Length: 142
Image (cartoon, rainbow, N blue to C red; front, side):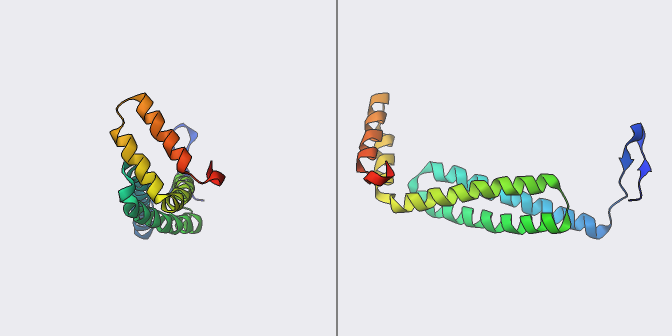
């Protein structure tokens, strides 16, 4: 690697070509979109079970962008931070897939529990909602 000594004995990287700059900019844009989709899916899931479709779409977009970023990060070796962030985000997206599938299977029970929790004004009422939810779960899921 052609590097010149910089200040304090540090190595100075050679300037990037225009193609490398464009590739890095594209990777950063994809990474930002990936982070927004994964975090958006996580936060939308917590809003209401009625928005499960949006959570599913955002999770699918996150998975696709994550795979694209993973391939780019490995093939082009642009940034270790992008690689680490992509792997972390893909783990979150995988957990979201499990949550989505579980919620789809128990859609009616989750909807009733959310409605009950929305009406609960005290800790005692909230606890009663949770007990009621646990009672309607299949015995294998408890």
